[in-house]
Image 1 (cartoon, rainbow, N blue to C red):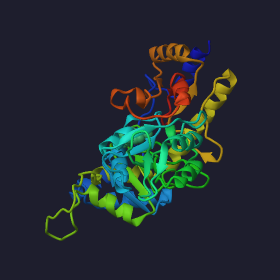
Image 2 (image 1 turned 45 degrees about the horizontal axis):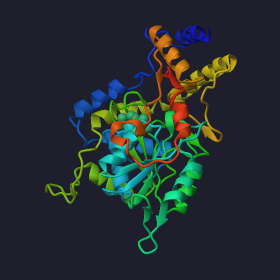
Image 3 (image 1 turned 45 degrees about the vertical axis):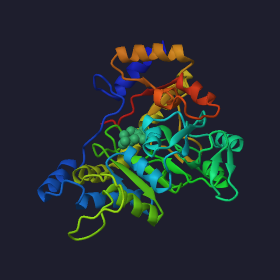
Length: 381
Ligand SMILES: Cc1ncc(COP(=O)(O)O)c(C=O)c1O
């Protein structure tokens, strides 16, 4: 039976017991930079490491501006607020994603609308997005606002997700969004180090976000980033992330209800060291993915590979099993053998807080959710 071969194969790749799905690797200058940061006494959000980290991420991704935050959810919340999402609006996203995507929409007081994903790259389907918009949305002739005819609410933005680091068809999504005058904010939380048609995920839309949680390709412990080419979006995101304090040498004055969302310097110190290793991590993970691809080719099991035109960071490797029953037998077997595997997230429209959210046909997401299994994907030593 191939499950046993799989366990043996993974244990050769990762000689730890148990083999976990992903764990951070600190083999660079993390401790040196942390010591430097502590010695400087600038451990909160003022300090050189935050600026250095932002600069490094901006240079790497090609974004003109990068604004560091306490986590990816906060980055998405800020980005959505700054592009104009208001309480009572609707924001289109996909049901196959981590819950934080919809939570950030809810934190704005807005309602997520779920449209389906594509079978091969797991990202939002441009076709299904177009169909949903054609069926439900009307551009108000006077205000130029896009209104959901059924709910009467304004549709304010689209949030596609680059799932497991695989770039979605962002160019086609942008085209559809443009036709309906909708800003696109990309959830690229998992996609640092991936590329799509020569550009980095998170730099296609008006804004994008990254996460540096402990399970991501690089980590700052907890952290996130807003990416944008628009100076006004960057400036507003920064301002709101620092309690909307007006710049002044000694006065404490705030001009909006801001947030305490700025990444602390101590986290950024780790981030600078991690960025120095990013390319090596991507290479390492791509080699692992190539080994998995060959293993699963021989077993005739679909393994999710980078879409056409993309270089993926293969953040989290995934296979597609026959059906729900086989998926659970496989999960039982592998976890009992000390190889951590897990199903994809519960689709967001099945969670209690999003059960009544508007949605289109979600048949592909439903099909995938019953079959996807994530397998160990960390950087190998
Ligand atoms: C797709 C996606 N969006 C958003 C987030 C939120 O990031 P964070 O955990 O840093 O808040 C994550 C990861 O955790 C994610 O995987």
